[in-house]
Image 1 (cartoon, rainbow, N blue to C red):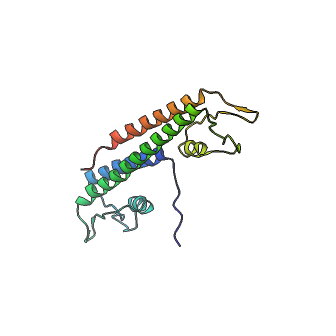
Image 2: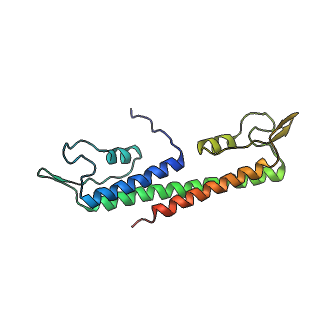
Length: 178
């Protein structure tokens, strides 16, 4: 039995990817070992990062008469993290655009958001926003329940557009795969 993978906020995960790329570039500039500590030959944080995300990893160790891999491992690993991060951005932008379209449809039909208009139970918008740590504003006018303001539709849509902007900023800092 393997340990469960823990989900994290998308923006945090993308920041971690960028940090990993920067650290790999630093190790490359110093010709340091990756995958195993060059002195102790114990697994390092790079290997842990890649393993936790099921990413392909290339070792590079040149020390104490041990030669594992070659220096292309740095570039290969950097490209693997870039592909991973860019796939996250693409998926997240697509999901967010879909949610914007759903919110626009709900607005056009004056449907409740935040709570299901019939059952008054939480809807999927709550989870979508919570998973991304984005403030969500509900709007319900049904069965004598009045929650929020009609402006909640546009405020939520604008919050999601800002979120897409953050994702695009991260994409531009990660760059393209070499």
